[in-house]
Amino acid sequence: MTVLEGFRVALEALRANRLRSLLTMLGVIIGVAAVVLLVGIGGGAKQEVTSQVEGLGSNLVIVVPGKFELGSAPTVSRLQLDDVDAIARVVGDPNAVTASVTSGEVARNGTREMFTSMVGVTETMTTVFDRPVARGQAISATDVDTRRRVAVLGSEAAEELFGDVDPIGRQLTLAGVRLRVIGVYAERGSAFGVSRDGEIHVPVTTAHRILGTERVDALVVKAPSSDRVEELRPKLEQALVDRYPGEEFSAVTQSQILGTIGKILGLLTLVLAAIAAISLLVGGVGVSNIMLVSVRERTREIGLRKALGARQRDVLLQFLIEAVMLTAVGGIIGITIGVGGSLLIDTFSPVPAVITWWSPAMAFAVSAGVGVFFGVAPARRAARLDPVVALRTD
Amino acid sequence: MIEAVDLERTYKLGDSDVGALRGVSLSVAAGDYVAITGPSGSGKSTLMHVLGALDRPTAGLVRIDGRDVNTLSDGDLAELRNATIGFVFQSFALLARTSAVDNVAMPLLYRGMRKSARRKLAVEALEKVGLAHRLDHRPNQLSGGEQQRVAIARALVGDPKVVFADEPTGNLDTRNGEEVMKLLGALNADAGVAIVLVTHEPDIAAHASRQIQIRDGRIAFDSAAGRDPAAA
Ligand SMILES: Nc1ncnc2c1ncn2[C@@H]1O[C@H](COP(=O)(O)OP(=O)(O)O)[C@@H](O)[C@H]1O
Ligand SMILES: [Mg+2]
Image (cartoon, rainbow over all chains, first blue to last red; front, side, top):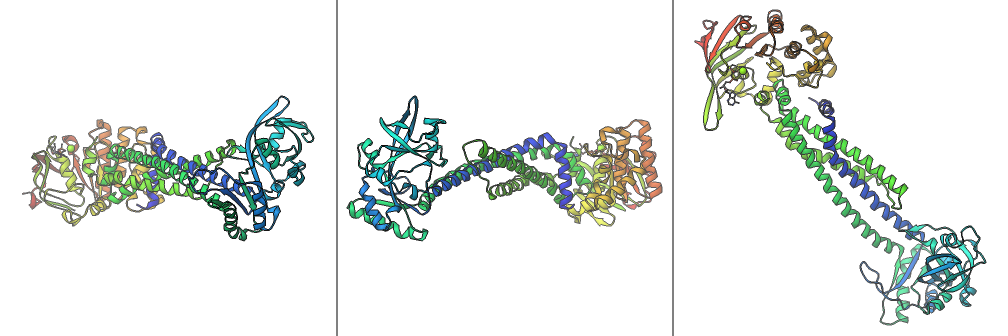
């Protein structure tokens, strides 16, 4: 009997017992779908983070106080606005450095009210972060120097506080202070449900007065080119250490941030996939179990086939192919559900999901392998049946 | 064709041994038509299984078509059965969810024959037993007599040298039983296939040209005893 004939015979046997075949496949279907889905969501999260960090603008170096590493607590900032000038001297371009201070505040326009991030920024923010205004004006050097009470709104904040009305030239209250709206940013999108479009930007000096502080949270440097990024980092750190002896600062690049987040998400994806793989294994045990029942039930059929000339390897092949077909078809259905589910989740929920080519391929290979592995025991039992005993069984 | 000398077949039941065959010697020549009769439990089926290479004797010698069963592997025995022996069982032993033509073609699968060739031979075999109009019927869509004719078609599809039939009429009424016996008779007379018929009914045994009676695992009577020195 050839392998092709084996497939034909196995397919017939599986079709003869459709419902049972489907139920047997269910474990594999669920396992494979779970693997594909979870890997898709994990990959989606990773891609989302990547695009968010890259969307900040290119060749950025972010300078924060303290150490930047997995699990370290954030350090309270002692950075101040004059550090911007010191850093600008290191970079050699005052327009390539910006600083910001962020605080959660309530914004109000008449009866409309929202909780928002008030971000104090310098005039270089728009160039460093590549964040153009859609209407009106950005915050200027004069605004910063003279502590003007002006604000530039994220598109969502504009929508929420002013609705259809053009906010430019109008007043709003932020943290109890009246500000005049001078511009609205172009839409940016959200990261992890936190929308940058909901922010309200004010001159950093204005923010300092409102908050009663002189500190800035972080300095951000835009390197002139990507190959200068690595060279700049130690220089930036040193410049700050010179100014604050005995303290530690970290100049981190986007790729470092990406690497760290990627590590966390990679680990998370791995754990999820491992859990899903266990369910695939359980599915395999189910296949083995049902195949054993099937062999017992079909003792007479096996005895008859052997009596009429089937050799051990013919019977072995038939039952192995049955097991592999169960798991392979289950695998294909599982992949379809996993891929379809990922697409649905990606389209209709805020959770992103991407399908990589390797996760369905691997899930299929594993499920077929599970079929071989868990099919061997029942198939061997079938192959070794004594035809006489099998024929006498009723 | 088949030669058996001092056959013994013992089943182990717990601590005790049950001797189903206790020294049986006989030979079946090409074209013979042998009926094996005897009371229930006397060892008829066991003898048929051993002579048909389905089972190995505990002691003694079986030679089928010149080949010593004791020296052959399980795989060789399977091939030997497939090539030279046909079986008909009391319970028909058809695959329930499989059409008549596919049931008949099944033994040819293990010869490595192509599907179209298998089907062609199976259709011819079903024509011989008068079931050309029932090719695609499943066993449960056929009468008992028709099912046993399908089983006979399956036994002869591989062009065997000998057909073993174990109580082939046991589950049939007299009329269908006669039909089956007619087919077996024709197979023997026209194609020269040797037939070993196991039955406990004297009427059925009477179709055979040679009578063997078994009692308690031994041959009690062989109408061809004079011809066969081993049975003396
Ligand atoms: N697998 C077995 N295990 C134990 N005893 C068996 C087995 N098969 C047959 N026997 C015994 O062997 C004897 C002969 O059985 P069998 O050949 O089926 O007789 P018959 O076909 O003449 O009715 C009986 O006593 C039966 O109980
Ligand atoms: Mg019997």
